[in-house]
Image 1 (cartoon, rainbow, N blue to C red):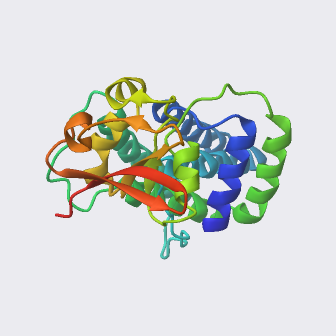
Image 2 (cartoon, rainbow, N blue to C red):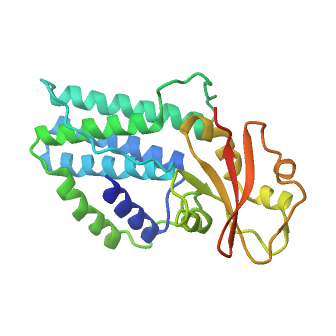
Image 3 (cartoon, helix red, strand yellow):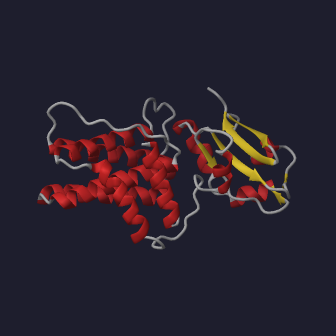
Amino acid sequence: MREIQQKIDAMILHLGGYWRPLSGLARLLEEVGEVGGALRKGTADELKEELLDVLVISTCLANQYAISLQQPEVNGGEVTKEQLYFQIVEEAGEVARILNAYEGDKKLKPNRQGESLQLHIEQLQRAVISLGEQCNFELFDSLYALIDEKSTRDFGRFDHTPDPITEDSVRSYLKYQSGRYWGGIEPKPFEAIGRYIRRESHLLRFLKIAPFEGLDGFVIKLDRNGMIFKNLQNDLQLPSHFEVEIESFGCQKYIVIRPLSQ
């Protein structure tokens, strides 16, 4: 799955960038509905295409939350195509519930144990692969061809949307450190950190989501002109369960905000 995630990431960057998560969710639910339509009509080619689209879009959502997906295994036992589709619908609903809490108006439950976006995306993909197996589709083989096709067919189709997983800050930081990180936009020369935070729309998302989703940190790349601050913890107005430090790798420096270990 790592190779597939990397190929889909490269495709998305080539096409202009990731959708906003709730827009990606809307596309996922649209494709799940189209899987149901293809099942009802009994059109094999259409069903295969829609299952592939569900795999691509759910992987995009996983990438946006820095999730390393596990290879889905086929469901064992006697499971009908209809039951597998019901599982796809159920897991897509769970993904929707979590993303509504992360990005929408639904409140996060502090005691949400054992339920993560990763869990439900993986279970969704497992049901998709199992349904494909029952229909004798080689979905993974077809997925590579679909990625190449979309990279050519859809180039320039989508507007660029800034995303914390695609910022240069996180892409360069991951050359030095591994983990699940988001990144901030590039600071302006000699910018006061308070002004920067007002421009950076993803930090508040990170502070809300990180304890639930297990994100390791939020990184801000410091250029040679620096950023103006006195006390990072106070200037950033971080909640007490987060810490901040400056990390250096050669001549490159980063502000890194992390949740405190529980």
